[in-house]
Length: 543
Image (cartoon, rainbow, N blue to C red):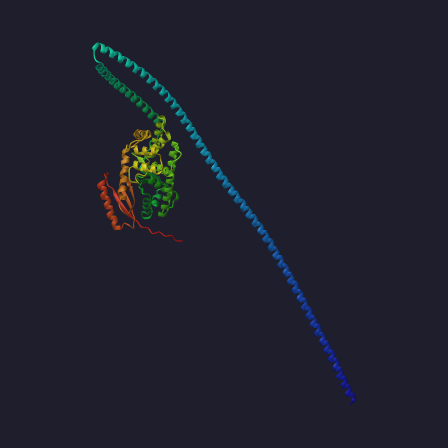
């Protein structure tokens, strides 16, 4: 029994020892595992810290690279701005140099003009010196003649005194009676001698004047050689092929109608191969129409919008040619200064005829003749040339403004500040007002010479143009008429009316009224067709 108790106690003790050892081992394992976990956590923390430091370094490196790139960009931008500034400085320097060069050229031109004026003044001084010498010689001759006349008077007095004494001795007359007889006889002789002397002087002066005037006119005509210009009322345009005629006509004739409405020129398309004809009395319109049609043929695109654009461009080109013609006339006559608007009006004379004679060529010819005659007579040559050139300036716009070409020319000359001598020459070249200078007389003479030479003028063409202008003038006199064009060589008048002012019913009455007025006021061969056109357009642009 005691042995069992001891065994039980030993077992209990052994169990306690084993459980103590097992608990110690368990706690030791737990402690080691906690230590291992703590060690692993420390490793993770250290690794995370290392990664954070590396990320911070990479971020810092990236920021440093971005900063370097920004510095490089700033440096490049600075260089670019410096280059732009240098280029701007270079351009400004070139601009300043160009302006300086232009000013130098202008100063050089002014110096040349001053030199020319000095030369002209020197020549005038020389001429004045010559005239002074001539006047001095004439004064000396007059003094000699006066001395001779005084001697003759003294001799005549002596003879009269001797005769009085003899008569008194012979006739026993009183002094008063003798004086009456002698004075009566002497008066009769002096009257007869004076009449003979005056007649002889007039004949000599007239002979010399006619000879001198003929010489001046011949020299002026020889120094002014002008060509005779023949004007037509039609222009011919060549086509590359006959298919182009159909394209010009367009669908249902819309192209040809648009062309004729925009130019005021009749476009004649017949069986003649590869040719169309432009008919109209106004040469400016005809030239615009010709250029526009040639450009349309070259381009190949023919429709109303393109026609309108081409006609506008051709009109601008013709206006430029008109200004160049005016400048060419000034250069040909040596005129260096004239108002630009007056130059443009002068250039319009290139397309104006008077009795078949081109008015610009006629004006240049008159300017040359007047200048030559004025130079020979010792008058102001520049003023004379200017007056001769501008004497018919009113004809350039006489169909647009009421009044004769003389009145219009005087208004234009006053408007653009021409001298009074030029204005009077324009006003007096047809004898409407008295001539106030010798230059006005020379302008009349030169105008007569230029217009009277053989082949210069044809009266039938002038009457024909006047008839066409009268047709347009009658048509434009009615209210609501926008434009009127005489075409078909005067056989038709086409009238464009404003659609907002004239209705479809009113155009019938308008055509009849114009027809009646033409029949009552004009004389013309054949028939004249009156065509009134009313057209209203609505245009918008899709964008």
